[in-house]
Image 1: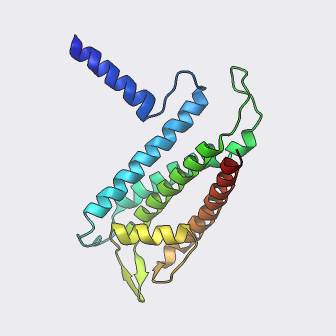
Image 2: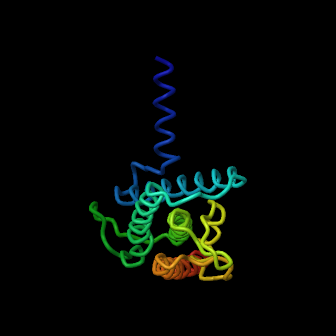
Image 3: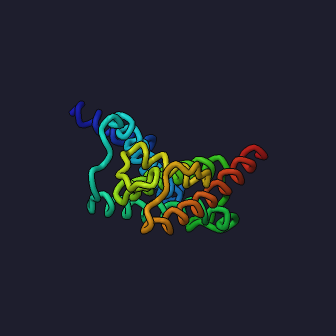
Length: 197
């Protein structure tokens, strides 16, 4: 009986603290918090695993499963970005189902924007890893670190020029830069709003 009680306490702690579900908050707020934390856990896990196995050579060829998984994560990341980050400022002053007024918390919006950006960088990197990049005029199959690097440089619109997308993925890289600009705008705006409060 004590083991069951311990498991119940442990699961309640993971659900409320780890995944962010709070009985006193509105259900929509809990869903947004849960989506952001799942994105954070996945992106951080992938990044750490990529760093640990960075000594292994890059992919040897195109992987349909990796490309499909990357596209699926990209769609999920864009949905999280639109629902959790982009539309939040437009909900200011709206009402919840229970009649409470909705108020944007700038610190939470900043955190959500950062997590959404990290998740999308990782999702785009999977696609670049499966489609290949151009390095010194030659097509190459990048490893996880090179793909993450190219994705982060593209997302931030920095563009060093050492890697380039293959011809079939150039539109996707341009789309990533556009999404990165939107994220950076949200990050700057929410940072100033948090400092103002």
